[in-house]
Amino acid sequence: MDPQEWYNGLPIVTKTLFTSVLVTTLAGNFGLLSPYTLILNYPLIWGGFEIWRLVTCVFFFGKLGFPFLMNLYFLYNYSLNLERGLFERRTADYVWMIVSIWLTLLVVAYFMSLVMIGLPLVIAILYVWCNVNAEQIVSFWFGTKFKAMYLPWVLVGFNILMGGNGFSELLGIFAGHVYYFLKYKMPENGSPDYLQTPAFVRNIFPDEQGGFGTMGGTTFGQAPASRAAAAAADRRTFTGAGHRLGNQD
Picture 1: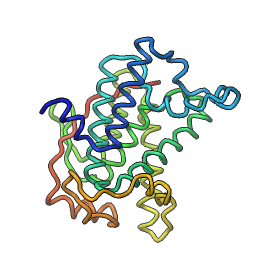
Picture 2 (picture 1 turned 90 degrees about the vertical axis):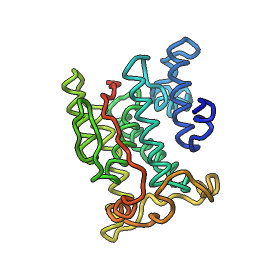
Picture 3 (picture 1 turned 135 degrees about the horizontal axis):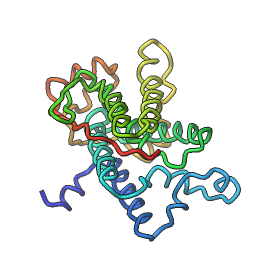
Picture 4 (picture 1 turned 180 degrees about the vertical axis):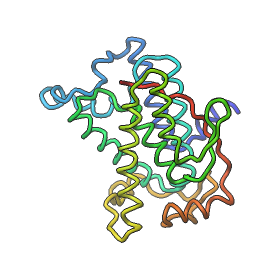
């Protein structure tokens, strides 16, 4: 497939995330922007009104290298699968999911003095996909296979084995779980949907009339377990690779 054709065919949220991360990280590494102006710094946000840091801290992935490429791939891969699957033709709901996770990470970053939250966002997106597709078999390095529900935890362990501390992965799991629990598990037990997409977001991102995914609109409103069962028969098979996610620690 022609690269331009591939890029133009990406759904809007995945395309925006992918492009923003690529442009921001390259700009920070090639001197077009100072990395220091891209990271999260709450004193400068409050005192200097440098509010762009609230956004650029998500899109700046740090130094270039193999970890950056793998993080970018995971962002593209799992975001694409969510946007063409669970959130097909529901752009507003997917945007609100990203915003909800972003806000959660900003709160944690404030209390823990974190400067970049890009990798936790990637892991949170992955975590949501893995829970929606909990029983699906995914492949890891060296041909190992297991259920998708275990992938986030495998990545934590693998990062530790490779010399990291797994903190960014754990933070992503936490943020993803907060969203998944409030959005799906609590409503299953009769609680209100506290993460219902606001009307103004729906006005900005109206539901699409077409789509690329195979799950379609038939699964909207189902609980995650029943939604996954309903989609299992006709969704395209995904064999997500479990390469190490580089850390931002």
